Amino acid sequence: MIFIQKLLWFLLLSGAAVSLYAAVGTSAEGAQEKSAAGGVAPDAAVSSLVAADALEESSAPNRQPRGLIDGFELLGDLDGDGKEEIVLAFWDAPGGSGVFNYLVILDLANGNISSRSIFVGDRVQILGGEIEGNKIIVNLVEHAATDPACCPAQKTTRSWAYEKDGNFREMPVKLTGRLSVEDIGGTEWILAMLNGETVPEDLQISLTYDDGQIKGNAGCNSYFADMKDQEDAGGRVKLGPVGSTRKVCPEDVMHMESSYLRSLGNTSSFSLVGLQLVLSWNSTDQSGSLIFIPGRKLE
Figure 1: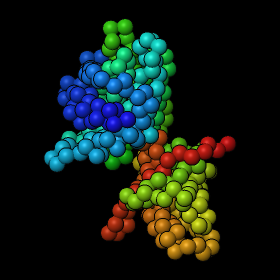
Figure 2 (figure 1 turned 90 degrees about the horizontal axis):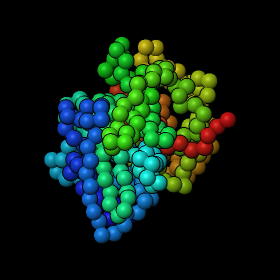
Figure 3 (figure 1 turned 180 degrees about the horizontal axis):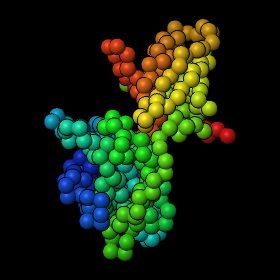
Figure 4 (figure 1 turned 120 degrees about the horizontal axis):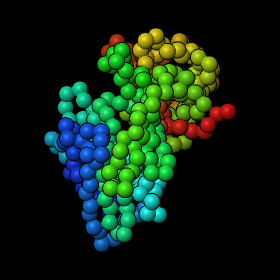
């Protein structure tokens, strides 16, 4: 696994997988390739979380912020050679207001690894995706013409087909609706990060949404609150007062629960990125985020 970490560091941080923004484009010409031979056969069980760790650990002073989107990892045989490729989602923030998103396709074959990149868009939210035959299919939230700069709300499906000449051809974009709190329903979300702090594994804080209301367990007590979309602002929400039961638990649990419920009560927007749910909150002089990972599916 050390080999994979070093290799991903080379391919991604060196810029081998990401070309200059003006040159990448969204067509077949926007894909580029880089190969590296290793004396050790790569481990096929590459995880985006491992890759993200490698990126974080390898960050250096004066390096532009960039990294992999946690939770997004597709496996499939795009080129029909009988071996699966790995597709990861990569972001790069070179400065200013732009955050450029790419797909990075890693092909582990015959002891070598090759990398291609496809430009996806600027300041888009990647919801998830799949590989279907020779196609990469990705679900996104993008800016519609009428969306404010802060709040993209147009849901789309974009896809790229692998061609015999080794290039990826983009297929027509499909519009699939507007972003809504209804999109977070059907899943029990588990809190992973509370304002930058990792939630202990033995403390499960959950959130579910159904019919205009969120509810869950805050670590000790059950809680509930109304949540509705703000009109004409995708991803912006209005949260009602948060109510909860009043059990008493150990002090450390109560401290985290209090912080969670206080942050939750100030939530003003949400996003779905790389299969994760992010609730952003702000008060008079503070702000933060609650990051959830998907748990069990609800009927």
